[in-house]
Length: 431
Image (cartoon, rainbow, N blue to C red; front, top):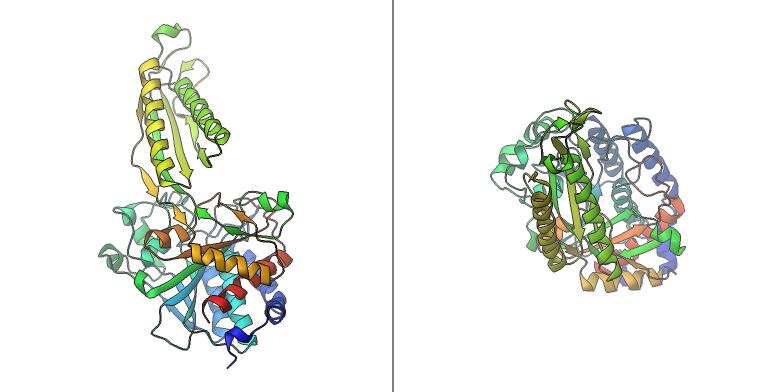
């Protein structure tokens, strides 16, 4: 077989470009797997995600890859390396989507892994270690309100109580959904893991960008500096008092106005950090009065919301949590309401490994691209691997219309540019 160090960048580029037709076909089939106008809905541990996993499995079998699954029903498609006992290199992403989302969020990373393996095959290259392309389950937390279900499951790191949470649309537990898709929730509950982090060389993911940073920069590809950590309150609410619309202000315990003040305080907090050049974000995804009681002539006594706060530095994230607590305490005192934040979910910051960052920069230059660096606006499974001590890296591909919507606009040309960087990096890193 060919020595990996002897492969020139032009040959790598040609081998990746040769995957164009096959990747178009796979993307088209994945769109059909989840078609749910507008957009697609590949529901985790449901019919949409199941069809996507079946589609990708068929493609991997046709390539002659080894197929495997774990207790969380994650999919593993392995190209054997020269030393099967060496720590493996994982290239992965998820195959689920948000409801009525786009076709490329997650799926692009799995297909990039398959395209990289196909390019290595075309180049007659056998890597030094196993290359494992991973189709990860249930990354989109909107369905179960739990982050990184598949990746954490593979590492034996599911948070306590995760298997008992219920999917928002079906009302069935995560354990029930996993079992229905061929997984083993009892083994997950016992902490059994598929991956020993010490036996992994690295985790790499290609993903569409979620903000139009590359569109603004005029670049097809960027390299990731870090995945943000976060803290979340999925089911928070404010307790006030339902009263007559004519009640004077001094007597009111208006939950809706308290919610509005909370939102404006968060926005001011974000502006403060922006001015100081400290990247962060906060989102009130749900924000509403109680539909069973609200009315035009009723002072709202209940206000429901969800909160996601994220940052790229653990110290910044911890300080933000303290600031949010202080904002809550101040509003409670001023307005006579009470915040019920409920159960907190959280995820650690996932910094990209310095050696991988340097290798990706070399790979991008070898493929004729100007290295562009961005922090990920979104959470990704790589953060779960980083939390387990696995070196991680990410490649972003230009996407004009953002993600989590039907209008994702990644082009096959930009996808192949990103895959070219990935393939070049694999040749350099796993040779």
